[in-house]
Length: 61
Image 1 (cartoon, rainbow, N blue to C red):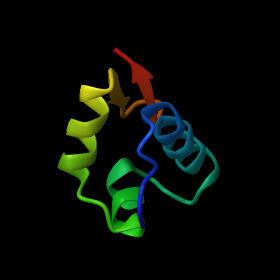
Image 2: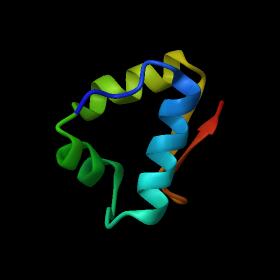
Image 3: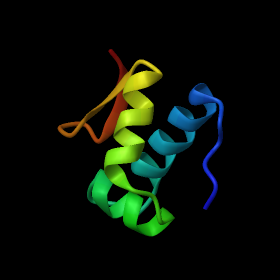
């Protein structure tokens, strides 16, 4: 799946899928989307977001 290039749209999409989907973790979501988790994490950090595992959500750093 091609992810949105706009980081604000991407974080919104990821958080929606993590909140509303059947994903127990970011790893599950990445496997479902066919996305490398470390690359996604790097991309999100460059955009100013970090994943909070406790609440399963990307938050602004």
